[in-house]
Amino acid sequence: MGIISRGFQGRRRGDDERLPPGQYLTEDFPVLSAGPTPRVPLDRWEFTIDTEGGQVHRWNWQELRALPSETPTVDIHCVTTWSKLDTRWQGVSLDVLFEDVETAAEYALVHSYGGYTTNLPLEDLLDGKAWIAYRYDGEELEPRHGGPARLLVPHLYFWKSAKWVRGIRLLNEDWPGFWETAGYHDYGDPWREQRYEGD
Amino acid sequence: MSADYLDGNALAGPFAEIFAADVTVAVGRCASCGLTGPVAGLRVYAQAPGLVARCPGCEEVVLRLVRGPDAAWLDLRGTISLRIPLPGAGA
Image (cartoon, rainbow over all chains, first blue to last red; front, side):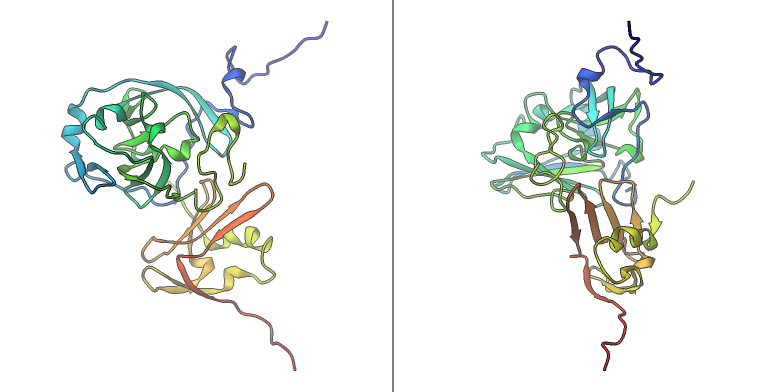
């Protein structure tokens, strides 16, 4: 009878089923960044939702923190092939922020302090699928991981979860973001391994 | 803590796969602030899904290079021009 070793990688039973194709499991939290880390003073921080009709919804830091929050525990998948399971966050569901937003737009362009952008269909931000996260693993979110606040959209590759999030523009047409204009997939579903344009 | 970027010489290998000439010695002009300098002097952020080279003056993106399994994507919109030294065209 053969012995199947799972190796000394600290894997828990069932982890393999939670790994999308082409991903490996990491216990670290690698820091990826396309530029210098923006330092955003909380008294100047704001988050906006701009509708296709020109309406601007705006929250400052105190207003964001006063909103009801959730504590999602989710698996995250980076397009550079690492995945991390059971990451613990705290933040405000986009459903809360969109409560009073009237829009018929189908697309969202997320933009960040520092100039980063990423695009996704608006429906991928709603119905409990996305948060503005400001705490990670019981601590305030560190700048290197996107603090003071980042988008969290765990069902898509993690480049969609924009660090240092500043706002969302609602658009009638899809507008590709930073990596989406440089060869990466427009949607980025890890379970369909949509890494590059054309995948 | 070390800087979170490399110098533009980090682009030599990836560019050698695409161009016949050594692009790191080319002199470029930043489309954002107009600073000129060799590609080797750019700040390259490599801990990312692609290589992102930024201007040492204004930190705007000068060029980006993504290597996929069977193609590369090169974005030079942050560069006004590159002066690429070449051997004489010959008599």
